[in-house]
Image (tube, rainbow, N blue to C red; front, top):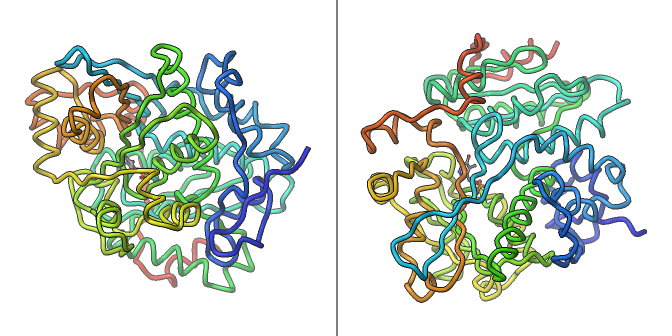
Length: 437
Ligand SMILES: *Cc1c(COP(=O)(O)O)cnc(C)c1O
């Protein structure tokens, strides 16, 4: 059997297998890894799949074919996907409309980033086995990613994680999810902003002395090991919806760095029954503006209520534009709408009043877009809105809008009760150096 190859977005001649691409993160030329060829699935391939883990195993197998991960993929999926991603029908006001919600927040930190982080962790634990010295993963975080990565790697034998977050700029519950781990996870509370945390991590990667002493890697969302598993819930839910309605469903995906939505595009490319893919962004409108005007102009990010989507220069755009270099091709793949903070608030209040549904601010952008689709697109079609986080993570925003307390999911409540510990750090590399002596 042939080996599945991945190429850099910047150099088609640089090609490596899946295990190597996951271990490296970024290509040596700074590009991102994309499949040279996509496997092709039929619905019947998934006939025996009952769980997310089953579906992920069938789906990801050909993507890692011929690499060190090939024989481990069933174990990796079983280990990573210990929770489900339920697809729930919602009541709607008109009989010919059908909308469902795909809940991606049943993992340990109650956001969809658990899916990618846990798969990546299970892969790296295996690719790193036998290496001398532990791999050190550095994560700069403005809140959500750091918690998911810390949770996913806690207790691993071959990998350590250092999380860097800006002091006073993450919510109390987010901070607890960054600082409650101990063992192979350290949390650094940095005197600075998110950008300073990111600069600190970059400074480590550019420091010859530190780089020669240790093996460092990053776990940010450009790693192939986070994208591959995100295709699994699109496969799982589209096959499930198709079994019920004999139609390919369309998806609305709350979007920031474009990792989640790109996984939907890849899944459709691999033959999964997926109709339209609609991106919902917050006030950061780089992607909708590109689709409107035709030129790509990334910009500074702007703070919004849906903070995990505050991205002005989505890194996965490079992957999308390599696969579809012409803007008309991109328009054929996805459409995109921007949602303001006022509209997010309005949607959270309205859906609670009307349906007793509580959304996080990110998920609310998706439902706002659903409500404002042209009626012709809504009717006689199956729509799935992707719910990216549990609202209890953003209780300070959501509770005042619905005038009711939000129950905290069990997994999250467990973390909130643990003792926590952070190391205070200046934003200077010279101070961090002591921790890598
Ligand atoms: C990260 C995140 C997003 C954005 O996902 P991308 O893959 O960056 O587009 C949306 N919602 C939540 C809750 C997130 O944590």
